[in-house]
Amino acid sequence: MQNKTITELAQGLRSGEFSSVELTSAFLGRIRQYSSLNAYITITEELALQQAKTADARLATGNAELLTGIPMAQKDIFCTEGVKTTCGSKMLDNFIAPYNATVVDKFNSAGAVMLGKLNMDEFAMGSSNETSYYGAVKNPWDVNTVPGGSSGGSAAAVAARLAVCATGTDTGGSIRQPAALCGITGLKPTYGRVSRYGMIAYASSLDQGGPMTRSAEDAAIMLQTMAGFDPKDSTSVDVPVPDYKSGLANSLEGLSIGLPKEFFGEGLNSDVAATLEAAINEYRKLGAKVTEISMPSLKLAIPAYYVIAPAECSANLSRFDGVRFGYRCENPADLTDLYTRSRGEAFGKEVKRRILMGTYALSAGYYDAYYIKAQKIRRLISEDFKKALSEVDVIMGPVTPSTAFGLGEKMDNPIEMYLSDIYTIAINLAGVPAMSVPAGFAKGLPVGLQIIGNYFAEAKLLNIAHQYQQVTDWHTYIPSHFE
Ligand code: GLN
Image 1: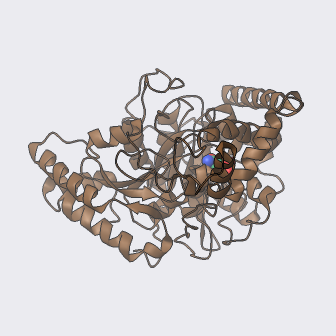
Image 2: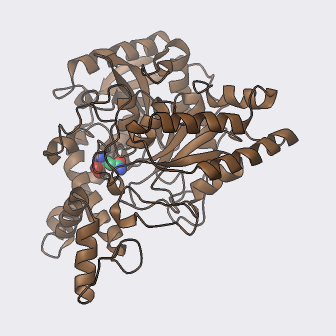
Image 3: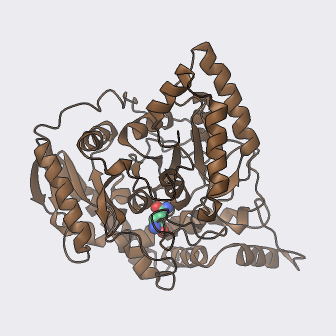
């Protein structure tokens, strides 16, 4: 049952093969059985069973949606009314959200079942899920390796069949990178496509929520529910939402694919490169034309991001002051002591590092030298994407330089950790959509292929990923011990 896709489960629920309560109970059982993966921060068992019951009643009326009764889980960055919402931080360990994120409301109205809240890097800052206050998540393909981050709990849960699908968020790669390292399908939509209302902010001009699933078809179904204009989010874009499933079967004959030479140079592991080459060959067989392109500003993405994202985070995280939200230190001597100790005691090392970097970059003497310069680079990167995507339909490349690395391996070397997002970060700076699709294995660990498209080209990306999944079976592999 746990290996079925959303479409297959929706059929099973309609034919009476199983009920949502049965399905939900099975997933709750697996979550308990595999708790050592540490994928969940909170399990909402009672709520899930109640939602499953309601879903069964709705299914019986014949007025159900594809997601009705499907057990899924939310990254713990999305506010869930009445349910603890931690963002992976001690700061919010006692925070019960008083309202739902728009995305959560949308899944609720579709009748989806929420199994719980998924582990993540603290405030979504990280690439390995090791900065979480709740401890590292393990990669189900090899429990001595990281699942990627920051949506590491989401990726591990979907790969290990502890949820049918999950939400993630991506500021610099946090949907695509863990999807690649855990062998699942992940989509970062165009900036503004999915509402950020109630999604705890890291770097507001980059953050975007999206689906993490086992197949492109499942991602299409999830995105259908998530996407759309939201008046509560001022950066939400009022562009009509297409029917994502209807274009999945389109032929790829004549599709033009650009491979930026900057993506395939030094730094890319040779096993990963060989796997990607085979994947791109499949696209040739499907009728695509492949050309090499150049995007010279890609190499500036990491330094620009590590000025812009911390700058925005230093502003966003100023709201956690021990007064209004979350953690407050014991017996503060005065107001300054309250601020200093509450923040000092509740934020982890990486979050503090980002706040310091961001505050520095925004300070009067350095603003022009760092922040303004980074914004100029961001513009150059967007121009590179605009130009490339006027020459080819989509861009393809790696998601990560290597497969999953060992737990603890990069924790003492932040620069090396930052470099694990070298192929994903530019996409956020430009705001275009991109996917990670399972493309094979290197020494037993999953490799992801990245597909990048133009603004609002999610339907095209899903079509391209789906066609590949019709002729390959990489997305159907299950990590052993989790069958
Ligand atoms: N790893 C990147 C960072 O730490 C991206 C994180 C994300 O996309 N949320 O900032």
